[in-house]
Length: 239
Image (tube, rainbow, N blue to C red; front, side, top):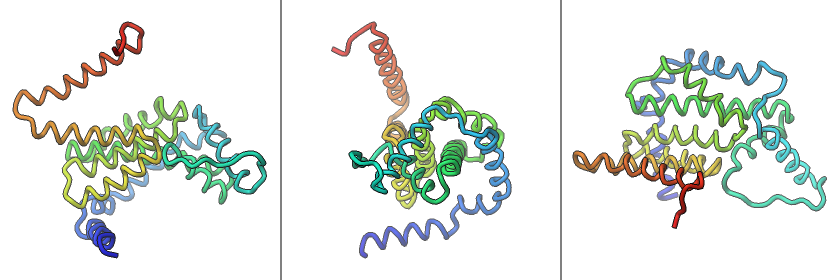
């Protein structure tokens, strides 16, 4: 096994030897369960989940199922490594539970990943669980991305938040977990992956800059966004 065995053993020690995250989960498991159930209520109080592009995800999964059974002559599955995690999950669940149940389960998973990913990220930054912020985090979980049904993008952001939470004050072993989340985020959607990489780079570079030089990064970001907005609104060119 070699290096792979070393990685697995290190990851096992991370999981079972005094890990703060697992200690938190054990001590707060009932509260976490109650909050999770409360956050999922909007996924079940209507006959159908109204989330924009969700219908096209279900349709694509249905087509993929037909293609897999050889019932859609002339159609084939293209190989793709990004923007597919939600669709793969939906298709797998549909084979077991049918599409009506599968979409509720898949969407619920996405909501929980996003909610607890943001919760974990805020916890890492503030060094304490942000229980008082659970209502606004829950509202954010049902915000624009969810309403538009951008489920792969939405899932990618949640996974990226988990990755950021791991590496915010990382030990060596935390980078292994963050790498796993980074890969999953990429498979879900490249934007979440790029945001994760960008945030890690930003924090690491900023930590090495002395004094007032730390302002260079945010000012550069603001200038870049301003320039992009200026060009996208037709007021300028990139040349």
